[in-house]
Image (cartoon, rainbow, N blue to C red; front, side, top):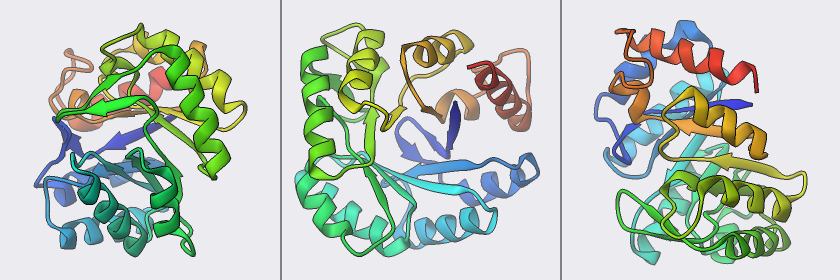
Length: 224
């Protein structure tokens, strides 16, 4: 299962993201992302370039709260040449914005709201949204399973898996332990994101270095 390291804390890109990225180059991470809030566009551009230079896949997750801000972030992602755009719900509009780019799109199924984002919706809602997004031309979805307010997180993962078939299921938000990585893998996830739990040292509280936190996550994702 793919580990997507997010250069974020509390749903915002950390202001020293470029320095953090430079410090982890030796780890050889293959999937690295950031949010559309927290730093200016010029920093997002520098991040995208640096991730590409590392040979990693880049991810931009949209967490802006207004529809227009989400569409603007999609425009920025397309202009940056992001590999994967995550988040938002206006799939048709965002796919139109990304037309002609190489960016793959993974929207939020369900009813995301607020910041940090919470997720409303039942398993039936999630499954239906996944089918709808695939019909629109999306590559998969970005599911905020552990931000759920109306359902069991793992039931949402299973529902998304049913709706997506073999398409890619990314689980994001509050994946803060080995047990959660194992659980979402068994429920059908293909990839997951972690940001805050690594950057604040809470993923493995026996280790102090950022590199050690990331190594712990990589080790825990290998069994899945």
